[in-house]
Image 1 (tube, rainbow, N blue to C red):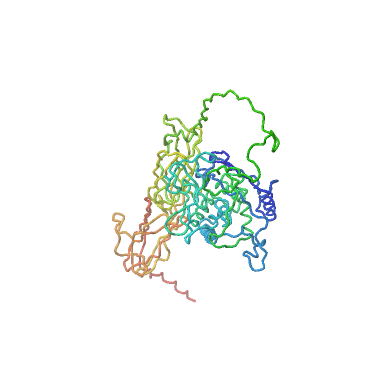
Image 2: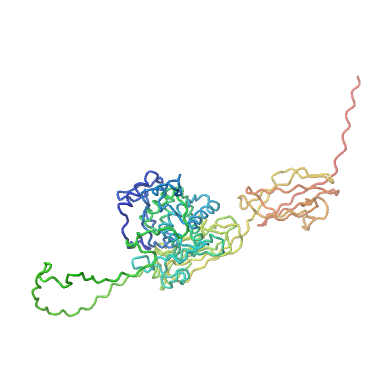
Length: 586
C-alpha cells in the first residue's frame, strides 16, 4: 500500500489461489466498473491512488496504516437465507457473512443518519462494513461492550517512518497513548489528526470516541461523504475509498467485501466473529499491535543421533574434515554510519505567514468574495513548497468551505502559498475563526477572523401602484406587498419591520387610524420579525381602519437601511350620485 508520502509500506502476501477463486466467483454481480484481474483480484477501471494535491486530512483517514488483506470466501451469502437454519448447508451462509450485532447496528444507524443529513451521498452501510472488515476485522470480531466501545483499544503500528508513514504526535497521546508518534486508533482506524475534525458522536453520549463503533462508523460515513461525493457513482465511490487509504490494493480489497456484503449478511453475537489473518504489513497475520520478532529456538537432539558435525565433509556420518590452517585475523573496520535521511519540506517549515488575505466579510447565505492565502516559510523566511496546510473553521458558526466541509487541506505551490477553498456563509451571524496549520509538524497555527453579517436590502419598491384605501371601520381591500433588492439582486430572507407612524417627521407609532390584528384579533400598529421570501417579496397582513378618516403613513424598514413609506387613505364612502336624466316626453 502507499505510504503517507507516497512510499510503499511493507507488504505481505496479497492473495492465495483460494482467495483468487473467491474473487472470481464475485464477478457475476460486481458493481459497474469493477473487473477481475489476472491474479483474481478485483480492480476498478481507471482507479488510481489519490494524488497528494487532493489529499484530505493527512492524505488518508488512516494515515495509510496497514490493513487486513483477506478476501471474501468462494461461497457468497444467500440473500434468501441470510441466517443459517436447521438443515441449511453451511456453504449457504459462510461465517464471514456474519457481522457482530452491535457493529452491524452501528453501520446501519450511520447509514440512516446520513440518509437524512446527506441524502445526495447515497452511502450504503455495506461500504462501512467492508471498511470495518479490512481495518479491524469488525472491531476484532465484535469485542465491544453494550455501548459499542471496544473492550480494549485497537491500535495500529507506530507511524515512525520505519516501514510506515512518518506522522509525528498530534494528540499528545490523548487517543493513542503515544506522545512521540501517531497511531491509527479504533475499529475504523482513524489517525488522531483526522479524528480531531472528523470525529462524531454516533451513540448520543456527548462524547466523540474513536474506540466506540457507533462514533467511528458515523465519522467514517461523514468522511466518505465529503467533497460532494455521490457513492452511487463509480468514480466518486473509488475516490472516497482511496481517500480513506491511498492504495490500489486497498481499493480492490474493499470493493470485494462491499460486493460480498451486498449479497447478504446476518447478525451474530458480539465477540464471536473471526479475526482475519493476512495483513498488508505482515503475512504472518499479526494483529494491529506491533509484535516482537520471534526468538531463535535451538534444534532439539534426536535420540540415537549425534548433533556433532558429520565426520566426512558433505557426507552424513563421514570422517572429520581436514584441518584448515589458521588465517590471519582481519582488523575490525570502522563501522559506516547509516546515511542520514534528508529533511522533508514539512520538516523545514518554521512558521506560517499571511499571504495577502483581504478582510473576510460576507452576508448570511452568501459566498465570501475573498479567499484565505497562507504562506509556509523557513526560519529565514524562504518559501516552502509541497507542504500540506490544513484550514479549519472554528467557533459558533455554520459557515463552511465550498462543498459543505469545515476542514480543507491544500498543498503549498512553488511560492509556498496555499489558498483555501472559498468560504460559504451560513445563517448564523457574528465572528468566527479559520485556523491554518501545518500537517505533520508542530508549529504555531495562523488564525484568520471572519464575519457573517445579517442579510440586508438597500431598496424597497411596491409591486402595485394602486393606493390602499378603506372606509372607516372597514377593511383594506388589498394587502401591501413590497419587493426587496440588494445591489440590484433579489434580497431574500431579509428581516423587516412595518410600523404605522404619526408623520414623516415623527416615526413613532400612531395611536389611531389603520391597524393590523394580532393572533387574538386585537389592534397592533407595529409588526416585527417579518422576512422577505425566496423571491425577495414581503406581503403584509391585512390592514383594518378605525373610525378616524384621513391620510396615514405605513413605514417599512429592513436590515441594511432600505425604507419605504406607503400612504393609506381612510375616507367615507361617496354616497352622492348624479341625477338620472328624465325620461323624454312621448
